[in-house]
Amino acid sequence: MKKVLLASTALLLTAGFASAQSIELSGSASAGLKYNSDADQFDLDDNGVPDDTITINNEIFMTIAGSGATDTGLQFGAFLTLDQTGGLDDQEVFVSGVFGTVTVGGIDPATDGFGIADVGYDGIGIDDVAEQYKNADAFADVHYAYSAAGLTFTATYGWEGVTDDAIAVAVEYEAAGFSGGIGYADATTSTVTAQAGYSQGPLSINGMYSDWDAGGEGYGIDISYDVAGATITGVWASANGVAADPGDGVGDAYGVGFAVPLGGGLTVAGGIGIIETDFSVTDVDDNVFAGDGSKTVADLGLTMSF
Image 1: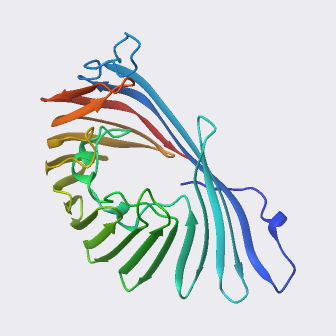
Image 2: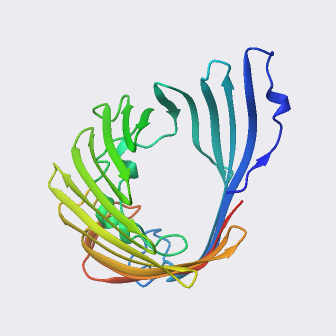
Image 3: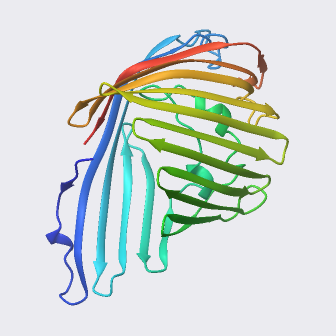
């Protein structure tokens, strides 16, 4: 991702105290069409107008990051992301050294990195079916990470949840094309998640499994292959037992997609899939609607990085 140096000299402190300060701006954007064959099944806005089956979608994210380092080797920094609505996301502050990295702010549980790929320029939600359990109902305020010799340990803690504080830990390893990890997240409920993958030349394969103690299981696999400058990805996901959220549902989902880099940070991508889950949703008047069957989802568009 191209980064633009804005004002490094403005952050220089007294000589001998700190060095290598900078502020950088980076960003991403996307635009395209999204399709959902079941979008108009329920009028969840309660306005008498069914949701559109085909919609135009666009997103913009700009990240401002500041960083520095002391003469003793301690690194520090902060960053935040602005979206197209003017909202602020991912507001984080970190300090890093030989002890690892401690981050506070808008962070995710340690197990959030586990999962499988989605397809499409914006994602059509195939992976959500398998990933709905991985964080249990955990959240995080403080994040700690330490890496050495291909091994990464991550731990997070969140204070004062609805009924309990939240913890999550993960251990991951990567070497010679192989990757794997196991994680545990716990708040009011807990989940154990395992993931493994292998990459060799143009082929990569990755799988995950989550066991939620409230009675749900999620698992899935993705396979990608690079050919003629494009990446083709196939994904299958499944959940059984109890849904983590009634709107997530349980059942199967599968899809296929492509991504073609056009150069300079511009990529054209798309995907199509089928989600076969039983679910329930609640409208603004607290009416509950049950869904049973299959829907087709797809998207096609452009992604940009700056």
